[in-house]
Image 1: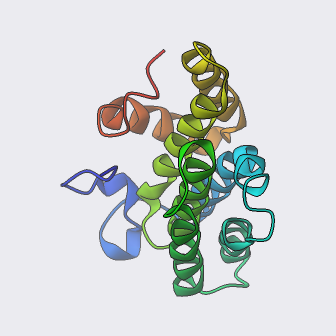
Image 2 (image 1 turned 180 degrees about the horizontal axis):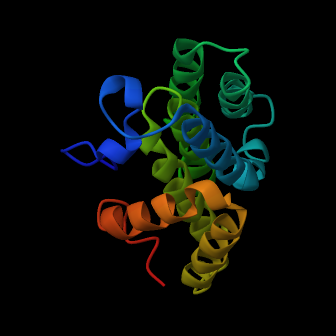
Amino acid sequence: MILPKVRDPRFVTIRRGGTLTDPDHRLLALWAAACAEHVLDLFESAQPGDLRPREAMEQARGWTRGEVRMMEARAAGGHAMGAARDLRGAARFAAYAAGQAGAVAHVAAHELGAAAYAIKAARAAAPDHAGEAAGRLECRWQRDQLPDAIRELVLDDQWLRNDLCWSVFAD
């Protein structure tokens, strides 16, 4: 479980009683899709004919442009997670990252799930004894991709939910 029991109002849109603006929600979705895409090859090399994770990221991006409804992006995220079920290791985590990215349109707090699963994928793909270093490198890459408008929000979220996310954000 990567979502907190109590929802952080910073990840709830203003129209639903939180403080998250629509532009920042879209930035969270784009960042989550970038995190997932960064490790997507780990899935696609294992399952080259399965397009569900890639489609989840495309739907998430389409949602940010207003071309896809939230329910479509969320459903694509669910299908990407379905692609992970029978897999193990890096390919499984990469598909889960894509699924989480697709779900950001529905629940913004899934942004951290996409990042955490991408870090787990990088760790799992690394040679023996290099997993921790690969995870730190992936985490740094992700942080470098953060738009300024959401940087503080995401970094604080990483600190707050690190324990829920397998401590992948610890430096």
